[in-house]
Structures are given as structure tokens and as C-alpha cells.
Picture 1 (cartoon, helix red, strand yellow):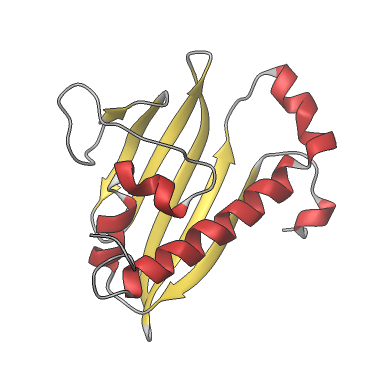
Picture 2 (cartoon, rainbow, N blue to C red; picture 1 turned 30 degrees about the horizontal axis):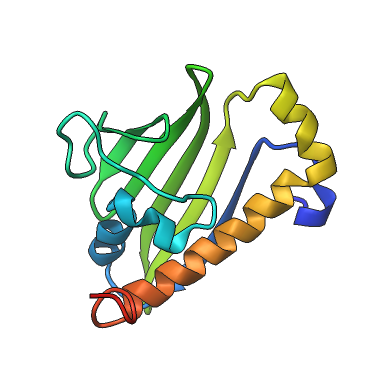
Length: 154
């Protein structure tokens, strides 16, 4: 995959990090969607809807997103909606490796409106998302490796 500065059209990308803890602990953090804003600069707030209180296949939450994969300790994914259509799939894959868990965050654009597509080039949205994934994984690593789940949080 080309480096961020060379990409200009959103299709898909991923970043990885190894976190010194179990896949179950990491899954617990990333699937607790109301906390997603603590790790991701792309997410401001998430609230479960329809009586849902935890990640599950088909669960819905505010932000025009819906859960698509909820496999504890292995994978968590959701798809955003844009104009009532599936837009971008965000996925967190968890693989046990020596020293902990390799977390791969990725996105795959299925559809975005033409006006948003035109903004990809001048804003270098790909670079922004690549940097945001690195930020998210770094904060997730800090939270997962902290004894209480997140330094300074109750």
C-alpha cells in the first residue's frame, strides 16, 4: 500500500500496533463504543439505541452506524451510514502474538457521496484517517496496558 502522502483517493487502509495484554481486554475496550471517543479523534460521542447496552451483531447506536461483527477476542467492526447507505466499514482485528495482541485497525470505503469524494483530494482525507488510526491505536495501547484501563479515569 502506498505511503499516506502518495494516496489521494479513499478506498481502504490499515494500521497495526502490538499491545501487551490479552485480546479479550482489548476487545472489551474497543467494543465499549461510548468510550470510543477516548481513543479516536474521529469519534466525538456514541450512544447505544433501542435498549442496546453492549456490542452485539446488528446492534445500533447513534451516529448512523451499526454493528456488523462482534466476535469477542477476535474482531469488532461497524459500518457508518451516509444518506441511508452503508458508507465505511471500520474494523479492529485482534491476533495473539508474542508479547501480547496485534491490533489492526482498518477502514474500507463502500460508498460516499460525490461531494465528499471531491473533498478527498484537496483535504488529503486519507492522510487524516491514517494519522487518526495511529492516534487511536496509541491511545488504545495506553488504556489497555494501564492497570485501571485508562490513566486518570475513574
